[in-house]
Length: 263
Image 1: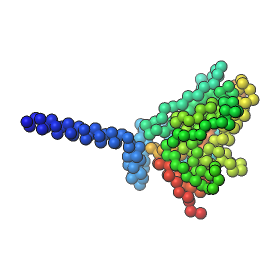
Image 2: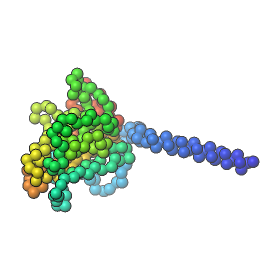
Image 3: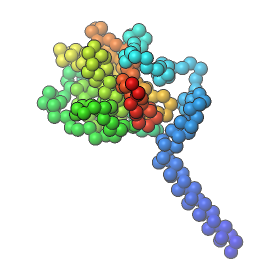
Image 4: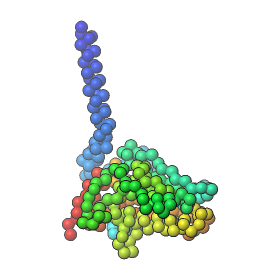
């Protein structure tokens, strides 16, 4: 009898533990972020394996915006290897898997005019429905385009026609994605440079890489690291970091909430 009661108790405990593990798993993002936010008075270290040599992206994640939206990386010189710059008869794109927080990672491509969607298809692009990590529909004005956030493509739609793909979409500010202010630079600045080059000839290829840069477990990237280099010539050549900021707004990168700064 005692063994029977003991067995029932053990089963109940196992059921409760299983339920708690399930709850913890499905709420792991919120739990980890709460732990991090509670410890903001102490230095936050990366949850990834630590090395003595900090890599370039770790350094980029530590950068703080000081008024310049786009900053050169490695003196604006791409760091592709010789193997990276080998052309092929057709272009391609490769997207990384989402990480354990559901965040998009680095995207690679060898871009060519043949990959680009026809103009009529581009105009009829379907509405984005993917909810990117940290996305909130926050209005910044009264116009239809006055939103704080876009769902920003890593590999631009105009290059390959890829649209509603979670691995290719991040939460990016309007200022990061397509800053319309005079003489301002943003992702669209470099995308336009690449697209103009590709449209000139079917034989033009551009090795392209775009990587969102996160700080620890934040859902919204601090910025985007973009590299592009044309194959067999230096017409297109850039290596830049673009801050994911919006003038006049304070962004909580942990969860994507934002408030207007006092003027």
